[in-house]
Image (cartoon, rainbow, N blue to C red; front, top):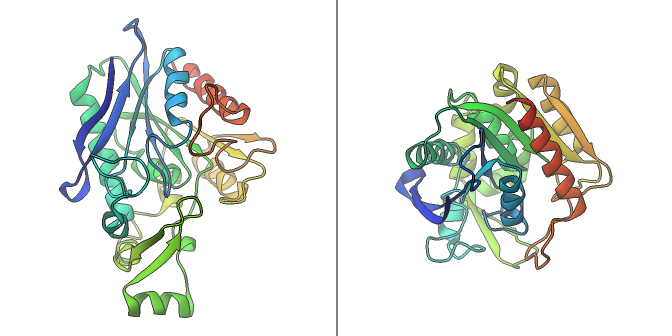
Length: 275
């Protein structure tokens, strides 16, 4: 099965895209739902090669664009819709993952198959927060965040954001000034219990794997160390690896970077050990 750029309805009734690729032999026991990170999308960099890598190892691979990631149905690459990006919030991403799981179960027969959530960076925090879903067998994070609160500004910067209603973050690659409406902060403030990654991790009594690069300058290794402690999960350190494990966008090579292939190999071994 190879379904590319299918449409699902995500948070706030916004439509977005989702892919599903499965092994040809029809006999496989596990499926991954992959969640991209901040300023990411399902076709970023090497993610399509990652999908192929898992499928060749007899694991189905589903990946989605979060509904308010800044992409559109017609142009899912990069960020043509900065209004939607500015309206994003963590609870929307949580809703999107649940909708993605619903779509997956409607689209293929999942009987006898184990579903693993895999999230990169902020997507790692998202899959921890949604991992309690009874349909999820295990959770895997790559270079994940462990806390949402400490990603918001404080003091004068927070006050200015509230007064102006919007703050901007430059995308170093595209040079876009990407907006965050103050509703992004308010969503977290009024849903702190729901969005408490530590609390969700401690209560997540499922197989968990956490992978992090030792040279990650975007999200510190200590965040995955905390996740591993809270979930009683396995922690894999990828020596010298950066936040994207050697990947970049666009990616024109036919092979995965060595660090990302190492991440994929550890993840596949973890999944196979659960079968």
